[in-house]
Structures are given as C-alpha cells and as structure tokens.
Image (cartoon, rainbow, N blue to C red; front, side):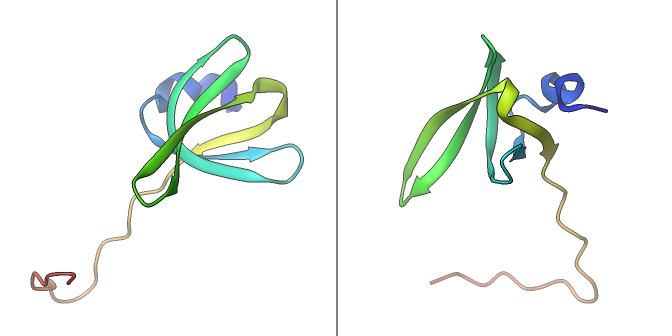
Length: 81
C-alpha cells in the first residue's frame, strides 16, 4: 500500500517518514492538506516543532512498531532518578 492510501489511518500516530533524497524524520502525524504533511517533531528539552513536508518529497510513511513483549520476569517498578 502506498503512503497516500494509509496517511489518513496514521493521523495522530507516531510515524517515520522516508524521503526520496535518502533522509528521514519521525514524529506524530498531525495533518495532510495542501500538498503537504504536518509532523510534530521533538527538538530538545521540552521543545517541539510542527514541520511540514511536500508530498512530492516523500517516499514512504510508516507507523512506529509496538515494543516487543518483555521476556521472563516482570521488572519491578524502579524510579528513574
């Protein structure tokens, strides 16, 4: 299935975008209109940016996979600090 067919199913989801020039990006797909997609990307610290990319520059868009199930014992809760 090409990305144009699945883009509406991916709205609001974390995605990876591959571009025709070999580069890529990831973020949350916010919208697609006017020949562009809009992706909320993480910058640094607590900063995010809504970026837009032309349809003609996109090779593919894919959803993030789910994390694999943990094998063995459940990990006890441990604070990160």
